Length: 325
Image (cartoon, rainbow, N blue to C red):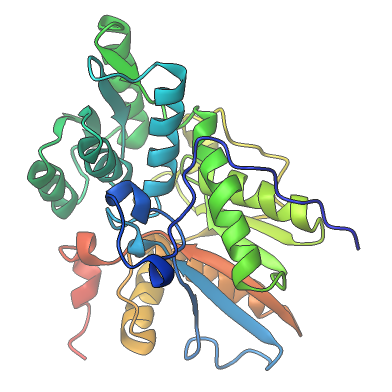
């Protein structure tokens, strides 16, 4: 089979080889090149020819996968002259993207204004305050869509003041994954990846990584997942049928679309902490549920998913204390 090469990078800095270099110029140079971790105990029921891996995205400087699109959006806006020292970066967020903006834009000398749902985890709000980010709380009943509408209103009211980053519609979002996450997975699996699993929020991770993987090998199966209900506890993920659909979302890309319940994600998040030693967030638990579901249908293959962040921003969630083992 002839594989189509990955295209050159656009506005995304080359990840630094820390083992070779040993020191970096700043936080922006730490984005990307996250480890690929094999799941071993929660996969013991699988055939010996099936392997499941997850990208450990909490290794990014702000602690989540959102550093990738945040840096890509910032660099693209700089190149286009849309973001300058005289403008304020504005966007809506469920938390992680805001923390990424506050970390990276702050390190690069830009002011940040965010809109975040009032029911975001208290840990996320505390981190934003610690980073000095200015933010407005939107209605908890409207979720991420309410934050989007509020950010749009701010941008429309003061267009000269704000650079509206608009992560849900900005192509620099998915391009970050096309030019970094996808090629990293190919390199880290020596091209052996057979399936990729990712959740849908902005859809940037799935869209960009999926396109890169399909460009490399059209036979790689792409599996997208979302919450099984409009009312869910999976922060950062969207129930697409009832939400504002991001313009960057490509509904034709997935080979399979699945749903996952909050309860199943909570249970798996606990298992990952206690059986794999991986203290991850709830969306990572959801990703593991779907990845294991796909893997259970195979006799051989390499299933790769992505764990967006660690569990540190979710320790106030009640599910951690469901028992006292």
